[in-house]
Structure formats: C-alpha cells, structure tokens
Image 1 (cartoon, rainbow, N blue to C red):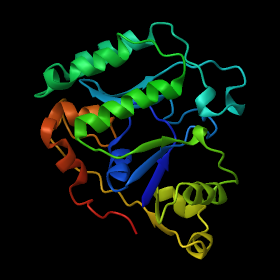
Image 2 (cartoon, rainbow, N blue to C red):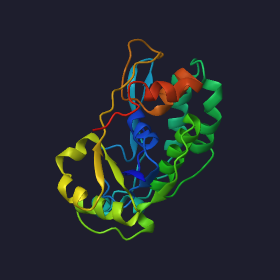
Image 3 (cartoon, helix red, strand yellow):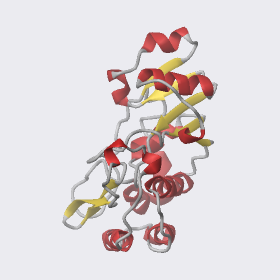
Length: 233
C-alpha cells in the first residue's frame, strides 16, 4: 500500500493533490506543530492586481506549542472577506459557476472552531472537484511515536505501508536505510508545476487549487498530473 501524509493546509496547492493522487492512502498529519508564515492557515489566489494571500486568523496564546489539531480560529468575519476576494477574483473565469457554490458553503455559510476542520473541508472540496478518491485517515486517531524520520516510519508501520511518498523536502531528513530495513520503500516527490490558462495577465504558479479549477474546470486533474504521472524518485 502506497502511503503519503501532509499537515493540514488551507486551500491547498496543486502539489499536495498530486502527491495524494499517486498514493493509495493519505494521512492528515494533524499532530504536527503549528507553524507561522506557513500554509497551515493561508494560501494564495490570483487577482487583477496579482497574487494575494488569504490568511485565517488563529488564537495566538501558546499556539507555537500546540498541535495543529488544537489550533482554534478567531471568527471575526475573515471567512466572508475571503469569499468576497475569491468571488471578485474569479467571477469572470470560465468555470466560476461550477465551484463557487461549494466555496460559498465552506467559507460563507459554515463556522469552524478548529483550523484543522476548516483545512479538511477545503481539502475535501479539492479532492471531490478533481475526482481523486483515496482513503483518508487522521494522525491524531493513532499513537505515532518518534521524531522526524522515525515518526514517519512509525506511521508507515502502523498503517501497513509498503511505500511512502515524501515531499521534496523529505530528502533533508529521511533516513532511507531505516525504511528499507523495515521493508518500506521511500520515494521523494518531484512535482513539475504545469502552466494553464489563467485570468489576470502572465501566468503565476503556486496558487491554491481553486485557481486551476476556476480556469480549467473538468480538465483540472489532467492538467495537474501532466508530466507528473510518476513524478517521484
């Protein structure tokens, strides 16, 4: 069984969906520590003035010592502002009508207490819209032990993985030999970002997946996977 995992992120980018599409099970690693200026609570969309960040405010007390599954959102109206920004940015996109209703449900019609629940909702929306059907588990439901490479290896053992797909940065900390000694083959993602039709001028990579969906629609998965069918080593 090919396993991959990633911490919860808001309105994920294309590379995460690529990694999930290559796997046979995905683990939401919500026991990771919250990080500021990361993608746990923010991501980018493209507007007529260029890319902008959409950031979800979170409670700051002891947040750097908390696991992602324990991070709470400050519900101060941020969600309607995000929806308005998305609506303005993409209302002229060819597939706007296909996805804006689901985004409105997530952002304007639902209140979330925990960041991980919001992140899961945006991930689930992306998977459904792309047609990716991979079983999902959550790390907080288990008792994974260890640190960095050893923690990932323990997860692989407990989830009966034969292969594990690291992100590209996994090369910086993965102990390959320890995986191979346990009969688990590690792989490292090498995602090649596609270029696709986009509103608002010159192409900008590394946007949220909603940028791809609004602009490409039902062809989004093909575009996302183009030149990336086996993009790992």
